[in-house]
Length: 423
Image 1: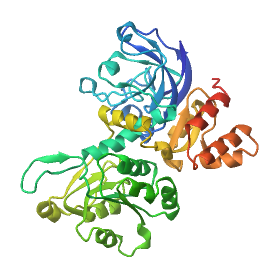
Image 2: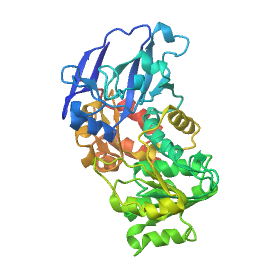
Image 3: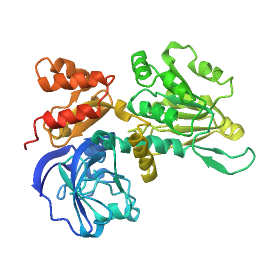
Image 4: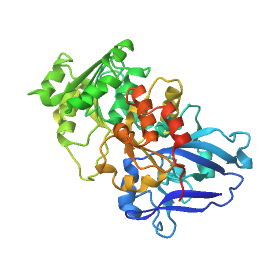
């Protein structure tokens, strides 16, 4: 079986190549990849090469397949797994395997196991560790968003509070019926956090979402309106902090001066982190969700409040398998719709340049369909491209039909009508 894959050979050395996969062993599974969403972590691996902790030292001689947010179908199941997995089943994977305590993961460490390709071999340990998850959704792109969505879910589970003041037992998760703030929260991941917040079974009574762009806030209100939150028992308030002389005071006044139980920081910006600290109430938990690229990134934290108010901080990088299962279940039940994360669509032949330039491409998630040839294109540009290209004209109609969001209907049309990949 031949596969076409985007392989990493070293720093900024990505190559789209076709090569032969070995025959699977009885404890392996051959799978077809349909979609992979690009992650900033893949950009970091690309610019660091073998200096990255997950990338092997010998990557120049034994290249790895990049990409870890993928979804596809099982093609051939090894004899060991015939009673557990069925050919034709849709699947996703949990990339954080912690196999033998190592950081090895698909998209970083393996020659035949990654997302930016047409076919892969799923190794035995990924299956044995429960990291191969059946997926029963209608569309492949939702499966590709299960991993980033699981990071959001993991963040909510990582927060913690005292069970009872004066005692030392902690309760994991956000404070139910409490006050929450999501700072810099109308980007793609922030929208996912709002969606999960108002549709999860464990909810705050109020969530305040901030940004400095009124345009982004207005778009967030269209996708996740305050009425939808109210219907689910949550008061949702959007605030443009650039419009207030003292936005911290204004936000504290919304809690009658008591402060917030949970504050999520969705941008690695020093003033935003420090604002989050200032917003914390007694026993408040600040979750630093946004991953900085600067290893020396730091911000001030009020240790008077740590001592007398039991304020505290936590962070999480990625979600675990249970977080991913929860994400999949909520998507399958149509409780959450992470389609708002997607702003660009492309074919496998656009993945190399997109990965290398990811920080410079505005918008949210860049979704790659691995069996087609297509330049990376913003959904917002579909209308203009549709004036000369009938493919984009119809895609534009389907996206507009879905409130400007990518959809299963658009995916089906794209896969049926786009130019096949030919490398």
